[in-house]
Each structure stands twice: as C-alpha cells, then as structure tokens.
Image (cartoon, rainbow, N blue to C red; front, side):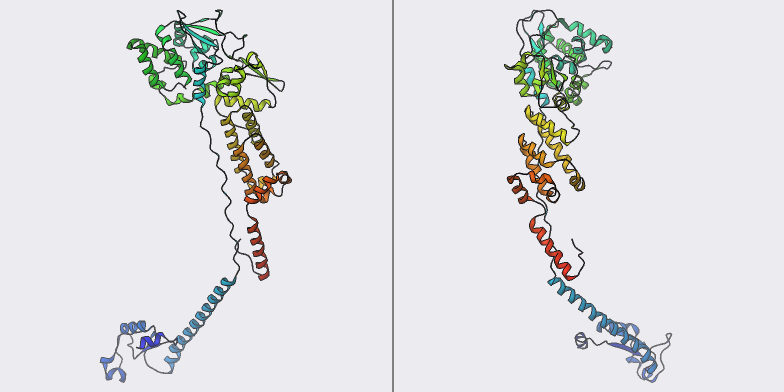
Length: 493
C-alpha cells in the first residue's frame, strides 16, 4: 500500500534508522534498550529503502544537528535532481515539437544506371582456320613426289609458328637457326622448286607474285599434311586430336611416331628439346598473336603495300583476308586492288591505319588516348571489323568513367563531338552511353558551349534523364530559403 502511494507522488522519501550502532557497539539509548526485538539491521534498512525507492540514512540520534546535516543535504539533492529532470523533459518536448514542424532536407535520388556494353569474344584462331579452308591468297603449294595432289597454304602463317618454315622460305638463314635437327628435317622432308610453272592461278594473288611449289618427300607425312595444317591454323594446341587423326590415317605405329616426331621438329624452338608435354601445353594457344607480330609492318614475305599520306606500309594479304571481310572482298573480287601490289588508302591517318593493322595481326590494340580510339573506331567501322569497334567503345567509356569531375569540367575534349561521330559511324551503343553520360553530369556539361550543339531530340533526352533532376534542385532551393529564414545553420546537405 505504501509503495503504491509513493509511486504516484514526487515527494522525496527518506528512511532513517535512529540509534544506529557506532563501530559495532549496541546503542544504549532508552528507545533501543526498551525493546531490542524491534531493532532492524543495516541490510534490512537498505532493502526496505530500495523497495520503496527511498533514501536510507542511519542517525545516531534524532536532534537538530543530524537533521540539519543529513536531511538538509538529501532534500537539496532531490530538489536539484527534480529541477534537472523537469528541464530535460521540457527540452525533449521542445525538440520533438520542432522536429515535427521543421522542413526536412530533400533526398537526392541515385542517378540512372548507365547502359552496359558487352565485349565480343575473340575469333582469331577461327579466322585463320577459315583461311586454310577457303585457300584465298595462298602463296605456297605442297605436292607429293608424284604430283598427284596439292595442298595450298600461306607462308606468313607457317613461318609464324615454325622456324623450319622460316628456313625453308628463306626468311632466316642456317646461321640464324643454329639447330642441326631443324636443318636436317627441312632438307630431308621438303624440296623447294622455285622456277617450276604452276598450272592454276591462285586466288587473290597478283600475277606478278609467283606461287611457291614445295615437294614433300615423305609420303606418310604428305598424306597427313592436311591434318597437320589444320592443327597449325587452328592455333597449334589440339595435339591429342592431331595424334588421333594421324593414327587413323597412317595406321602403322612406327610411321605414326615418325610423322609426329617431324611435326614436333616443325614446331620446335631452336636450341630446345620439344616433348609431347610441350606440344600439349596450353601456352601454345596464343601462338599466332605473338608470332605474327614479327611480320607486322615489315617487308618480309609482304605481298601488298598500302600507300597512306605519302608513306608506305607493307602487309600480307593472307592475314588481311582472314581477319577482315571487306579486304577479303577487295582482294578477291573484280577490283583494282586484286591485281595490284600498291593499294592507296584514303580518309585514315597513317598512325590509325597502323593500329588497325596491328589488331588484325595480333588481335589486340592499345590506343594512346580517347581521340585515337575514336579514329580507330571509325577505321574499324569503315572495314566492318566489329570486334575492334567494340574494343574502342569500351576503351572510350573506361577512360571517361575514370575522369574526375574537376578534370571533366576543365577538359578541352568535346564529348558532344564524340557523340556526333559515334552516331554518324553507327556506333549505337557508344552514342547511347554518351547521352546518358552527359545527362548524369548535367551540371558540368550544361555550362559548356558544346552543350548548345546537341540536337532537339538529344536535348530532350538529356533533360528527361538529367541528374540531379529539376525537382530536386527546386526542393533544395526551397530548403535553403527556409533555413535562411529561420536563421539556422544547415547541418544536413
């Protein structure tokens, strides 16, 4: 009952124990000595005070001194606590009231997600393998000793994977090779007949370039030569498949092993022992785009010369035809280029065309900057090499995304000009991405003079997808005006 009553009142409650022991000696006052059974221990007093939420005091005697010293201090403490509590509750109530009536700052939404450009998988090995199947621009023919069959191939492709063929086609001398096993295999396996007349005109080769005739002395090797060439043109990494094909064709285990040993010697690096494990190594997968680089922009085995800006660039028709459909049509159709060694190139700078040829030879490119990447993209669109076009698009996007806002605001690079070129040269993915890029960085580009060059359709797209939006900027302005009018400091922006 007492506890319930005290819970509903804010009056401080003090429980005093009168006649408490001093230093453990029992009190001798009449109140304590009259009835010791009514005495309470200190623990009982503390427990009672805790249950009632009161303050527990032990006084030796009840007189003016103890009342003034202890009761006055307790009452003063309760008064201060009560005032602090009331002040705190009042402050909380005021803050809650202010929070309810205060204008909240606007929330900035996230910008729209940029379009994702997907890269195209490489078809480098497939292009070169298709070159062997169609035999366009073949410049070497292999015959058995009875000249009953013929297998056409391309010197530059064979030399890109084999020092033996480099020696055979006089790209390197015996002094350059310095490997007796390669020289002995070349002499025992092949005979080159330079002056022999060839009855059929090869496709895609000008009449002034003779087709080289090579006689294969080993009949077993000659019968397996189409399979060996397919192995080489496919990237020279499907060794297990080659073994199976040769075993099916030759059937004699001894001859099969002999043919495989000759193939190993053809693929051999001078001065090193080639094992079956080396031939099965996955490192040979990228054989072409490292070895064909040796023939990039060199006159060795070149059968076409491009004339660009009063400069000449040598190249190889086989590589160009395999990697570029436009050039395949140009060198195999009824065009002047099909029967000409010197081919002029217009509308492209020498550096850009060299980068284009480097991609055809190596399946990789590394533009020096965004402008060169755009020039290379235009060249790729001109010759319909779509994968190179996608690589240039990804390069431009990566460079722009990594550019800080301050650099983007101060750069002399015209993004609108890039947009116009991308649209003109049918780069739809890049043009769409650039529009989103301008809209996402609206506050930067809207201050540039080039922004006025956008068409009405482009401007409408940018305004529709701009970030931050007009609604947010209006809400932000209203919030700033409100903060200023309230003479408060803005702490959340």
